[in-house]
Image (tube, rainbow, N blue to C red; front, side):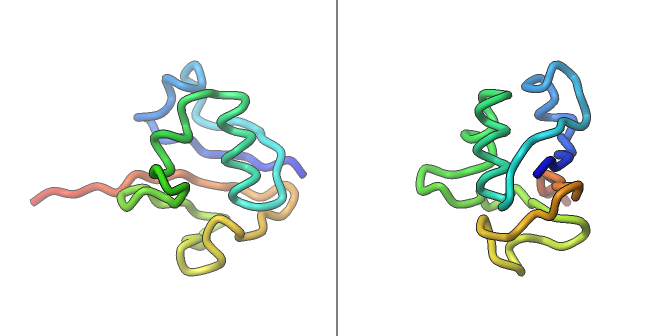
Length: 91
């Protein structure tokens, strides 16, 4: 299954500046694993040492936050978009 991954500006150095990349995968975990394989460096920035999503990184399948679905086991339908969105804090 091919999925489009939207890459935030802060991580585009890992994709040679591309804002979107096509990756295979049936679940969020599969997509992130294949993203790491084709564009090394994503894993350390998206997942913590336990393999969970970092606290300040949000991942959406379509418009749904995977934390409110099945987490990294959330299915990603063929042709769907997975968006990586870093949380913004400030005051």
